[in-house]
Length: 249
Image 1 (spheres, rainbow, N blue to C red):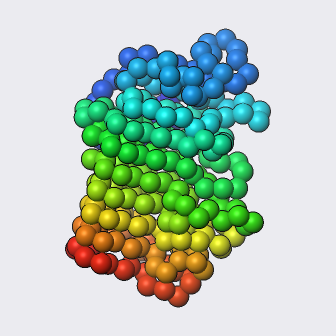
Image 2 (cartoon, one colour; image 1 turned 90 degrees about the vertical axis):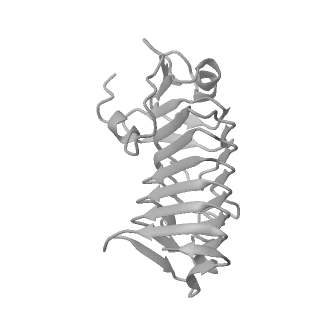
């Protein structure tokens, strides 16, 4: 299995140097070299430091799971379907461990449902994509980060109320598209932060008609950087950034 296409992206932020102990392969159709028919089973069997390769199959991909392990989960080819019938929960990751997930998209309309809670280790999400639904806009956070020491998102596309909610954590976002992702009804704010350190680089934030502001922070250290390609918009006419305390750079 050739990993040269995907694995370099996993180390963009130098998220750790732990090497994989074992590599597992997931494919719903089975076949030579396949270890598990679904991702949750692989997550249960794997140990911290392991890598899980998820292969795309016709009408099949990955579903949600809960883990406290330092795993690397790769969608082989970079665009494996993700079906969010259950959330992805990373909880209680130990200091020194790194959880990484890269290369998945939702083929059906709807937001991501990812919860990162009480993690002392490093969590990195990259190239995860979801498109908004016209009939039933997501009214809950798409990605929620709580009491976690180091979380980074790169090239993540999603929406929600808000798209990303963070409290008592350190969060970095690079080239993330939050808010309106397709039809223009994105809904809530791009980011809602409380008592956190948040660094945003090259944002693509374009919130929908229902957003009071694109970014709302309270007691946060917010740093925003970028170039002419970055933007933070609110087509509903509200504030771009609202702060109830803290510092904005």
